[in-house]
Amino acid sequence: MRTLRFVELAEDGRTLILAPDVPQAIDNGERFALSIDERLRAAARGDVSRLGQIEIDVGADLPPREIQSRIRAGESAEQVAAASGMRLERIERYAYPVLQERSRMVERASTARVRLRESQTALPLAEFIAERLAVLGAAESRWDACRSGPNWEIRLAWRAGHRSGTTRWEYEVATRSVTPLDAETAEFAEGTRLVRVVNEEGGPAGSGPFEHDTSPLSVPPVPGKGGEDRRYRGAPVDVLIGGGAGPIPSNGHEDPEGDARAHDPRARIPSWEDIVFGVRRPG
Image (cartoon, rainbow, N blue to C red; front, side, top):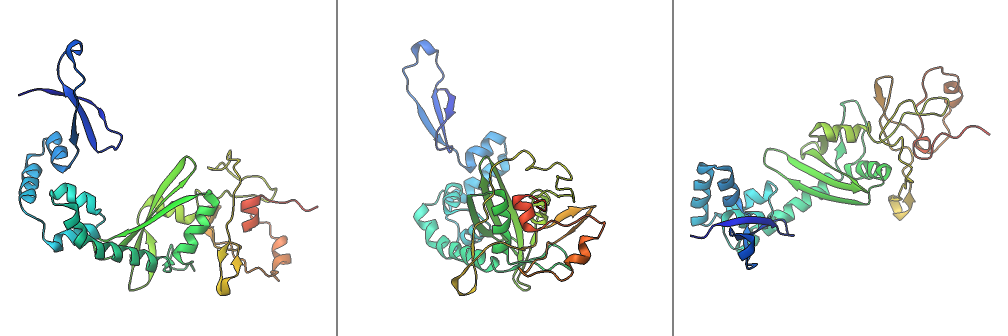
C-alpha cells in the first residue's frame, strides 16, 4: 500500500491534493485528488459512530421525506448528495419543491412586521433591512429561509466593502411578524452599530464604527404606492441616547411642536438627514 501526503487544498475548496510520500528527489510530480465529504470529515475527527452511520446511509437511498426534511432545514441538494452518496439528479427531483417553498417563505417574510419590543411600531422586514443596508452602503445581499423547528428562520447575508455579516430572524406565520434570533441581529436591528448619536453642538457624542469611515452613504429610492419613488425619510432608526432607544418619527410635514422642543434642554434625537449628511448649523 502506497503512502500519500497532503500537498494543498484545491481551488474549489472541496478537494484535497495528495502526492506520494517519497523524497523530493524522486518525486515524479504525480498527484491525487480526494474529495472532502462527510465520511472524510468523520474519519479525520476519529468519530467512529458517525462514520458507521454514514456508511449505513450510503448503502441505502434516503427516503424522499428525509431528503426534503434536510433541504427544508437549510441544506443544498449538493450537500445532501455528497453526504448520502446518492446521485445529484435524484436528490434534485425531491429538492425542487422544497427550494420553491423556501423562496416563497422569504417573499412572505419580507412583508412581515419587524418586532423589536412589544410597544414598538415597526416596518415590513424588506423595507426595514433596506434602510439599514443603505446606511451601511451594502451593495450585495442574499436572502434565504430554512426551518428545523416550529417557525421559519429568515437569513440575510450582506457585504459592504470589506465588511460582511449575516442576520437571522424568526418568522412567525400566525402573527406575520419577525424577531431577531441572536445578539448580532438584535444589534443590527436596533441600529446601535449603524448610526452615531449627534449632540446639540453638532459633534459625535461618542465613538462608533463610522467615526473614521469617510465613504459616502447612499440612500437608494424605494418604490411607493402608484410606482412613484420615495426616499427613506423618517423610517424608524433606533438611536441610543442616555441609555434609552426610540425611533425617529417623521412624516414629511412640519411638526407643530417643533418650537416647543427647540427649547427643551434634553438631548435632541437627530433627524434622518442629520444621521446621513451630518448636522447642519443654522446659517
